Length: 94
Image (tube, rainbow, N blue to C red; front, side, top):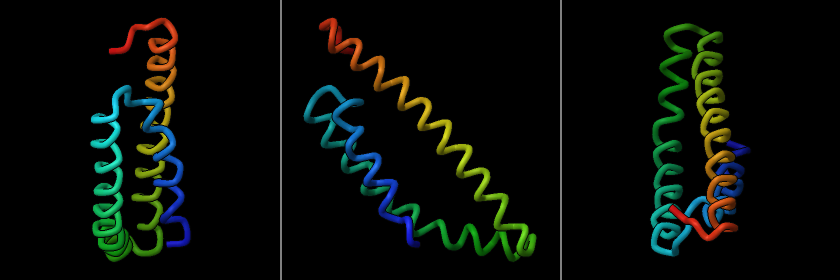
C-alpha cells in the first residue's frame, strides 16, 4: 500500500505525450483514475486467493505476472510516445 500513488503519478505526465488532443487526454485521465479504483478493489482479493491456494509462494505468481505485464505496457507506451512525438515534429499526427 506504500506505493499506491506511484503508478498514477508516473502515468499522468505521459498522457499529453501519448494523446494528441484535449478530448482524448480527458478520457485518458478518467481511465487512469478508474483503473486505479479497479486495482484497489481487485488487488487484495487476488493476492489473498493466490496465497490461500499456494501458501507464501503464491505471492510470487501474481507479482511476477503483474510486473511482466507492467513492463510490457511501459515498453509499448515508450514506443508510442516516441512515435507521437516524431509525428508532432513532422506535422503528421494520427
